Length: 87
Image (spheres, rainbow, N blue to C red):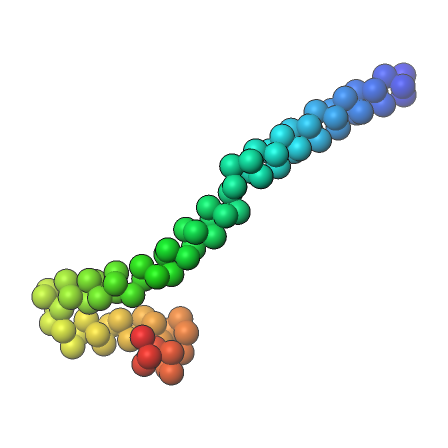
């Protein structure tokens, strides 16, 4: 009886390992790491222009000083005074 359960366990393990190996193979073939790096790169460089547009639109609605003050407050909460002043 233990040999039957051992065989079932081995078959299940082989199935799981083959699934993981297939996923890793596809991950490598599709260049997922390079694509993720490119998304991070472009996101980092698109942040500043997006921030300028958000401040402009918020400035029209709430006034430029209110928009800048709220942005400073939000960034200050995330990264501190000096970095918020630089942003």
